[in-house]
Image 1: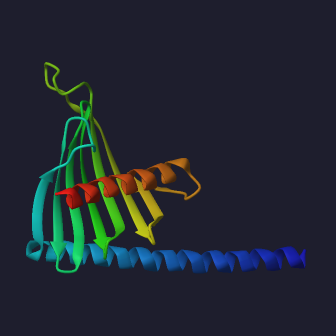
Image 2: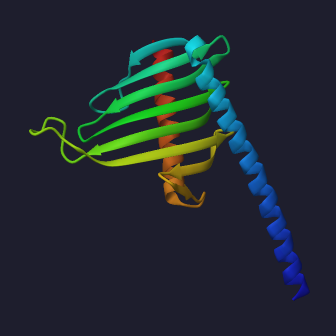
Length: 169
């Protein structure tokens, strides 16, 4: 019994340390994102149409400084949705991604025009090319959750496609 209590105490202490480290990293990412947004007016901006991201088209604005890519702001359109995404970089590494997806009740060519019936917001925090936190709406997802991995992979894939489009032009 004493051994089980001791193991539980050690596990609890390690969990607290890991949680505190994660919170410190999240705070650091938020600070970096705020600095990028404050500096955005000074960055070089280039806007491009991007193919291969969504069927109805996508447009991305790239914010760069002498030290490289800082931010990508993208608008994406589909037959039954529209979305915006903001991706933030430290060096060339993705550190934070935010996406707002608005789903329509029908396709865009319908008469009467479609109405937005659902809005989904996703926030993904990255460290070392791996997601450390995913928030969908107001829900914090567990790293073991399949939705966590899907959000991580989706945002990473979007980042790679948008960065490739920047390099192609």
